[in-house]
Image (tube, rainbow, N blue to C red; front, side, top):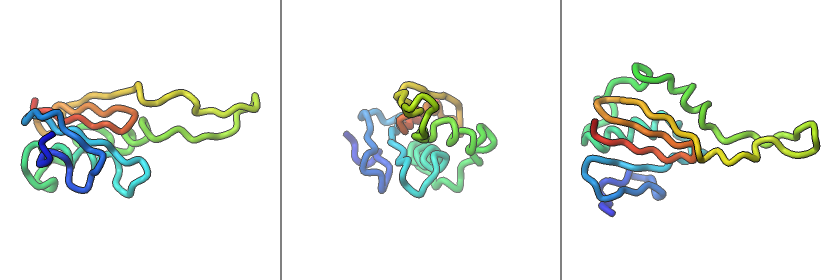
Length: 115
């Protein structure tokens, strides 16, 4: 693993060793939003400051992205079981942002590749 490609402060991020790819894991319990993780990963890949990238909202609705993959709330179901027992890590969405191909997985994995 090329440690220079792992997002700073993201101890669960990793990289496959490719120079045209950054992989990170979003911390659902952390203070940053999923949008911040995406923009930070893109900035890392492009080797620029995140403020120099276009707003993510020009590509995708950041709030909708967060809501799409927010951890399922565990609330009582009417049958006495719990809702939210489906493993959410299988879903993913892909989009292009700042000349990068971005894939966000429901488990918080964010993969940013050069487009």
